[in-house]
Length: 426
View 1: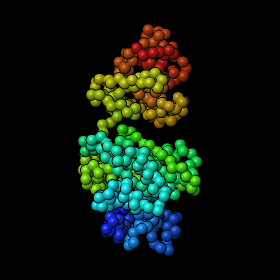
View 2: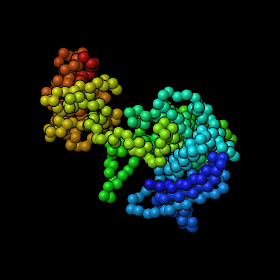
View 3: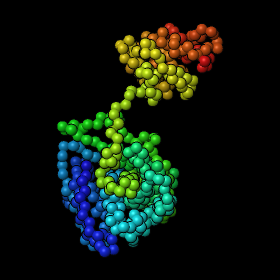
View 4: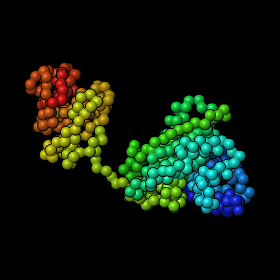
């Protein structure tokens, strides 16, 4: 965790006349082979990158950046974009606050502060123009902008944000990048989209907390990541350049959090100075542990298990009655699919634990050809109910004549649709 404390005095022209910036945090390079790189100065460059070398400070006549490094028992290492992850958030949200204090538009204020930095201005102008900066938006939406240099590349992003029932909704992100000579534009676009998704998930959800010396988060139920419905539409625009190529794997991450925070500040009138943003807005509580789902992502109805039946990659669900619940190995636990359907049948069977294979032989598999190795095992009575909707074209009664492979895979009594040489849904 890093803490920034910044004091800025504005001149008569609305631009900073004095800037005092203090950073407190734990070095991510300490204890690694890279620690020797700052042994002489004692200042970890990754803790102040994006601040000490910020273009916003170049023309401030009186400025100071200081670092207080502390050590604690919690181990820390690199995060995508390293120190730029927090310095970009602080610098860009602070510049927006200065623009509001000066009564100047956020993009125009950056133009003034970035005068003499053509590559910063290039991505800023391109992103603002492609995003339609200054044009009307639907009611309840606002735009935020951020521009940052990292790893030899310059990135500006404009985020279009709204609040839906207290939850942050990012609808659109317009990204402009100047990475020098663009060797592969498709790779650049993919890395920008990836960096935006990573940074947005951390900005909205990412938090690790401690209580009594222990981490409180354990899995994705209490440490959520960005979900598909939360992913905004992303447009990536590349500035033509003949400069030396810069990085593209990490520069897309730092600007997204401040861009979203600036949009929320424009929407609510309240500056956001902490991450994650969702916790800062005091929105709905962190989602609790969801109900157990099967490996295919289907939610059981009425508390019963879900038996997958289908042809090839297509599958349908049949919820058995409560009295006919699937049990694994007769020990009173719901049967679990092992998620091995894509492996060849012989490899999948070898990949399963030996006890699971024995349990699958004792029970009657009820599955499809594509899912025969997942051991979706149910008792014969439940299997008969599950297979009632299937007809065998070769023989009225099931099972039909079996091949050696299907016999070896099933080796059990009772109807099973994938035992038939030819079968189709009823």
